Structure formats: C-alpha cells, structure tokens
Image 1 (tube, each protein chain N blue to C red):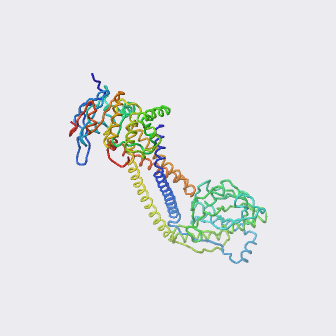
Image 2 (cartoon, each protein chain N blue to C red):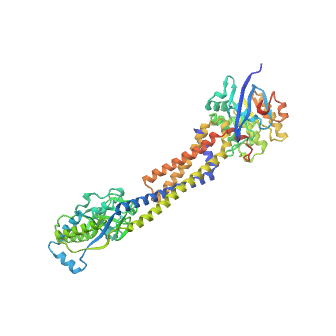
Image 3 (tube, helix red, strand yellow):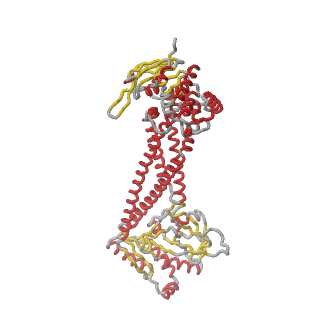
Length: 222
Length: 417
C-alpha cells in the first residue's frame, strides 16, 4: 500500500495577462507517493512550474486543495506555509539562482539559517552535504566563478542540506550536458533510496524513464 | 530578526557602491532642502518684518542743531543743560502723535573681545556697537535665538552692569551670561550678554532698510538717575545728546505729519529745547515696496525650485528604489523558497531603507549644523522629509515585493547566473 504524501484536488490557477486572464491549471488532481520519484511533464507554458510552486507552497492556487497529510496547504497562514517550506521541502529552481552576495558555503547554509539551526550544526550539515555531492572544494568560492554543472550541484546541495521530506526540482537537467545530467540523476536516485520523495518537472524522456510516476500536463493543466 | 540583520549587512556589503551613491544623493538632497527652507524662512521672515514695520508708516530723522562746537559747549555749560536734555528726551518718548526711535551706531572699546586676557596686558579693542532705546527695540521687534530680548528693566540705571544683546555673528564666541569689561563714553562698564539676535536681523537706519545687526553689540539707551558727581553729569550729557538724535515714526498722511510737527513744537516749548532739525525726511517710505518686490520674486523663485527639486528627487529616488527592487526580486524569491516569509523580507527592505535614509539624514543634518543653518523648524521639516522618504521608498519597495508573484520571477531567463 503506497502512502500518499501530497495530493491535489481540483486545483485551479489563472494568471492575469494583458488582454484577459489565462487559465494555467484547471481542476488538476494528482497524488505524490512517499519515497517515490514523480515527474510532471508537459510543454512549456502548460503550468508545470506553477504546479510545482503550488505543491511547494511558494504560490497559492485560486481554488482547490493541496493536501499534505490531512493539512490543506492552501488554508495555511503565510507563517504556516513558510514553516512547511523551512521544515519539509527542498527546492531546486529552474535557473538555479545562487546568491551572488555570499560564497557557496553561505548559499548552502541559507535554509539552515532560516530554520534557526546553530552555527556549529550548520557547519557540520553543510560539510556533510557538500562531501556527499563532492563539492567541498567549492565551499569557499564565489558562485560567479562556478561552471553550470557546479552551480547545479551547489543548488542541489542547498536543497537537500536540511534533509527534506520532499525535494522539488524544476527542470533539473534542462540545461546540462549529458555527463552532468547523468550525475544529477544518480544523485536523485541516491536521495530516493534514502527515502526522499522527489517531484520534478521535465520534458526529457531519459528523466521520465527513471521516475515511478509520470503526470502529463496538457493545455489547461489536464 | 538575527537573520534579517545579517541579510541587511550582506546587502550593504554587496551593494556598496550603489548604497554609497544612494546615501550621497539623499544627503545632498537633504542639504539642499535644509538650505532652501532656511532661505525661504529667512526671506519670509524678512518680508513680513519689513511689511509689518513700514507699511503705511513715515519716518523722519531728528537731530539736534548744535553743529557749531562753540554753541554746543555753550549749551553744555548752562547749569540745567542735562535737565533740558532729559526732559526733552522723555517728552519725545511719551509723545502721542509719534514714536521716537533713538538709535546710534558707535564703536565701543572692549577689553579683549575673545574673552581671554591679552598678552600685552589689557590692550583695548574696538567693537561695533549699536545703541537703541526701548521704543526702537519694540518697533523693530528684535527677536533672539538664544537668551532673551530686552525688557523694561534693562533700560533702567543698574550701576555699572549693562545688559546687551549680541548680533548673531557672536554666537560661537560668547555665551549668554558672559560679562565683558568695556569703556562706554569713557566710563568703565560691564556688558552682560542676555541674548543673541536672530541671524539677518535688520532695521531701518541712515536711509538703509537693510541695516543688519549681525555684527553689532546692541546696547540699551539707559534712563539715568540724577548724577552724583561732575563726571557723572558730563557722562550723562554726552549720552543724552546721543539719545535725542534718532527717528520719528508716524502713520503716513499729511494730517499725521501736521500733528507730529505741532507736538514737536509743544515739546520744545515745554522743555526749552528748541534747537532740533528734521533731516532726510521720508514721508511715504515707498522704497520699502521695491525691497518687498525683490524679496517676493526671490521667495517665489526659491519656493518653485524647492518644490520642483523635491518632486524630481522623490520621483528619481522612487524609480531607483523600484528598479533596485525589481533586480532583487529573484534573490528575494530564493530567500522565500528557503523559508523566509514575505513579512520578514518586507522587514528587511524597511530596515535597509531606514538605515540608508537615516544615515543620509544624519550626515545632511550635521552639514547644516556646521553651516549654521539649523534650527528647530528646519529640524522638524528635515525629519518630516526624511520620514516621508522612508515611508515612500519603503512602500514602493514593499508594494513591488507584495504584488509580484515572487516565484514566477525565478522562471524568467536572465543573465544572473
């Protein structure tokens, strides 16, 4: 019996655009199972990232439910949603976005700092995560000096440093070469083996193939 | 709060140049505003003072007719000369049809203006002094910025201590309560500073509507009691001779002039002092209108510049803040998805704005203080502008953050990575 960790019910999201509103998600129902890797596929602009953001509580849907256990994330206060982001999830954005005003170590430490971890714990956890991803040598560097593949690994490291229950990744292999893509997928599989639930968006067949569930989002998110 | 403070510090560290430029820009703006407000305040004060003092007034200069030294000596040798002078002066002071303004600029010798003993043992120094009677002080409404103005008792004979007001240029050299040994008409007196005149205090004197008192020590014309010694008598004669030379102010119009002339004749009859002359009579005082016009034009010009400058700066800073925030939205989004709340991000923005504008206000105010154009009104205006800026720029930044679908900014391709 598979355990549902996240579930959406009749999820709708519209955006105001010049000349009217655009429906991006229309009554989307899906289930994410604990410990599985789930892919959300679809063409560009079909609402994959929007759905991911709603599941990660970084965006609110216009209607419908997003259930984490029996908690509807849609009904949570801003503070409650921030707590969910801090404690339960990790997120790798499509364009990575490392913070330029601090070094790699401080970038990776960011979620731990928001979680209120003590300094010594932060150091220990960052070093452990960096070691696992083989990026210890990058810790003192400025993000601007890194290659695309290195940045990807730093972004992954930041998202898993607090050992999240669910890891969201928006097009994690979108702009990587084959070697780096393979490396990232291996990391995801290792994380899955360790029990992390992974939800990612992709339009890459090789990524979908290693996933346990694949949802296709068409026009209007159906 | 700890996380917010750390982020604020990181923000300043990574945006040094941007923030230094921002602080400099706002500081310069604050200094300009302060200077403008000081100027408009002074112009308004000067204008209203002149209007109030001269509107519908006529001024005549009154002097004694003893030009000839022999006639002067002859008059002084009369046994009741001092009484005649005193009676004449008091009658002028109590006249009903005019106001008598006794004023005279004469330097005074002060033993060491700087308050320290001279190295060569008490060499005397000359200082510009301006003597005024009580009515003249009231007529020109002398205002002080520190201490107090003259009161009735200051014009009474208080022995050797004479209360004085100092022109504003003396502000940094002396303090209220300081006493300066001086020689006044060859008599040793002690000048006690009771206050400092407002900067740019001006009066009408010698045909000049803008006779500034900033450099002067203002001495009261004392009403002396009966002299005890011959030297007392001689001293008082000299002082009262100075006191009967002054200005007569009446409401403009022929009828008022005739009334004044008639009363002057009556005073001469009553006191036995006939030798007086009106010179440089200025029955309509129309010239002050020209001065008012110039001040009005200056005032309007400065006020227009002030408003324009304020608006341009508000818009410029607003646009800068908006664009800066636009650039930072993606960074804010990273913080947001890593656990920051919108509220904590807003707090961070407010803190950043607060510190930048607070620093600019502090620097700007210090410059104004050094330029000596600070006062409580300017401080209040200054604080008001600073708070307006803080609220305005914070609101612009916060609205930008609040209205943005923060996470959507992360999906926009750009050149940040």
